[in-house]
Amino acid sequence: MISLTSPFCLALAEMPENAFGPKAIWESASLPNKGIICLLLCLLVLQLYIAVERTFVYAQSNAATRSFLKLFVAALRSGDFDAARQAAAAHGKSHVAMVLKQGLVIFQYEKQLKTHGQDHDVVQPVERAIARGSAEVGDLLKKGMLSLATIGALAPFIGLLGTVIGIIRVFADLKSSGAGDINVLAGSIGEALATTALGLMVAIPAVWIYNYFTAQQDQMATRISNAASQMVDEIIRREGQG
Image (cartoon, rainbow, N blue to C red):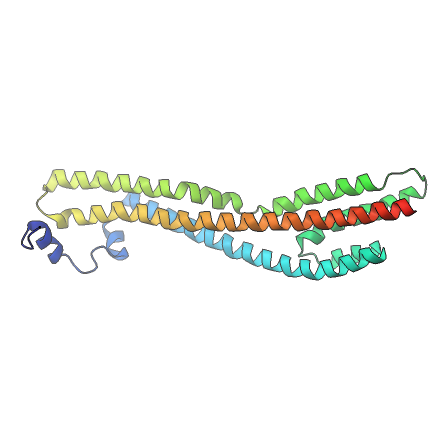
């Protein structure tokens, strides 16, 4: 059992109460590690901005999509594709409406061309327009995801770099002052541990946020695919009747 009168315990008892607080660690950190801490804090702010911006965008899109699909399904059932296109144009915040609007615009254009030739294929141009729209919307949905993935992957290594710098400083302090006074080493040790902790604090939420919005992207892609398939099926059915 370690005696309370040991040099280590006495040194800890003599240390200020907030010796390992954020302010003390910052003040004792070396210049390179201050730069690393600032970089990690900037990455934390960036991921928070992306999270808030994406949350707002998806909330708007989901609300607009629910409203749009009610009008869209009703218009399809009645065969009123012009009303479906107007509904898509009126719900520009909906990613589903963005895709279907392109398909509906091409459908109306191809219907006009078909008046000049009964053998003109209407369905394939619509499917290609939907594919193009899906690709464009997919890029919009991926906005900020690369940054989140990069933050989640690199932040622990950036923190680890700060730890290595701090450990090097610990050994430098040991060489200059010896191992007798723990207070001399406290700042370097705190600096070394704090950068790794901060790196993990930045990386862990970044990974969670990335996975959350990836799931949101998959749900949106499923909605787009289902609505587009329903529209193409209705076009094929009505073209067959025509």
